[in-house]
Image (cartoon, rainbow, N blue to C red; front, side):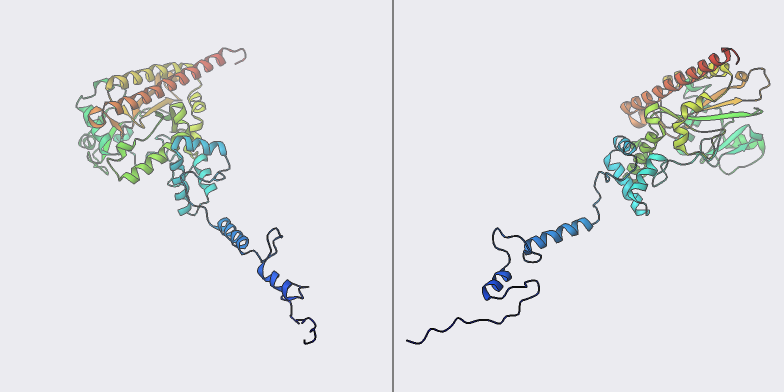
Length: 389
């Protein structure tokens, strides 16, 4: 029998990270990784490493646009929730997406929508004090008539008025003229004609110092079905959604009306003017009798609109008060008109249900406006009756 040989030894250089592994068995165990129940070491568990890598990639990956904007998209959570409730989650998400295309962050986009502006200029600035932002208006016949570019709907409305088709509105809608009649009166051809413009009486003509206020009536200023008549479905949806957000942030959706322009309001955003509508109404005049007369005329407008059978979207009440009247009281020169008929329709165009819906919204807005004007007049009267006033 050969003599028993001594156990063999190995001279193996440990790999980095396995210091102290001096035997083949220890070295092999280290290579296999931790056994069941053993603690993980830095690179022995490949599954754990892969999981960690996937988590890091997910954290670094840009968020995918969903129907609901990121929770931290706006610094004003209440404003964001209000926009979502009114315009819908998908609508607000589309605003966020549009903002990204324009280089804005999600936070900036929602802040603009909630505080006075959004992609596509949801809330514009009042460009002209007396007309609430209507552009391209020109004085004709020495300022007696206003020449205004508009769409086919409003041109057709005034043509129907001249033809006597809406007798209920006589006296509350400004008198209109044809381009030929106006040219005969002032000898000027003007920039347009009956196919592009309307020509209506100027409410402030002959006033020495007119103070004007343009108030848009109704909780909504757009209707998708009507927009579809003049633009593609996607564009109509987008414009409807933006205007719906504007109605919310300016107060129309809750109040039923909003101021959109007037004397002393130039430079303010539409949102600011809309939010301050009640205070603006209270500042129409210092004379309580002005408010009494305006309540009477506003009631006439409300009754006329109800009897007309028409639905009005984004129509306005234009109020004018002469601050330097010839009479002792400015109430003698306080007057108003119902204007802006670019979105007016009857059951022949849109159906009875749609007409009823928007007629109700207009009527409710008029009722709220009348109540606020009446309250403002009562407050002015109490102030003048207080001692020392």
